[in-house]
Length: 206
Image (cartoon, rainbow, N blue to C red; front, side, top):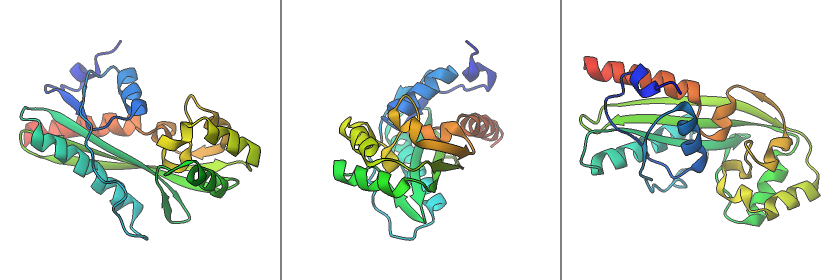
């Protein structure tokens, strides 16, 4: 496997400020070695009508900075946040099965937007770099028994918008996407690679 860390001269440990198994899996697929240190930040503290791009940027940076300030060693910390937005309303993770059913009914037959924020923080200098990816996702019309059966599996309960497009029945709900597939999973890989590469170069030249 290609040693990406060596290719981009990553000379500090990489820390993922998230417990998301999907982000962990994608980082491993890219060949990164990393530590996992979840940052427990309140993701529901926002006002209605907030700019979704600002929201994911702010949360991603808060997560990365929280870990960077407290690890006590040199590292590059990656914070990330993914949200689903339907008609200017943010859909976070459902609070229960009833909420998941409500979300999936609202997404049925509609196009929504998935935003993922990425924040990189150098724990030595607290220098940071932030980026955002946007993907449009269109659902086909969903039958109620499909929604109910999916929710009963419990899978939607830990996912923004109450669905997953990867390794999941939620994949058959998606009729069309416009943009990065990995963004919907929770970690836009090309954006991560490009942003990390630029950040490391800027850090060395700072």
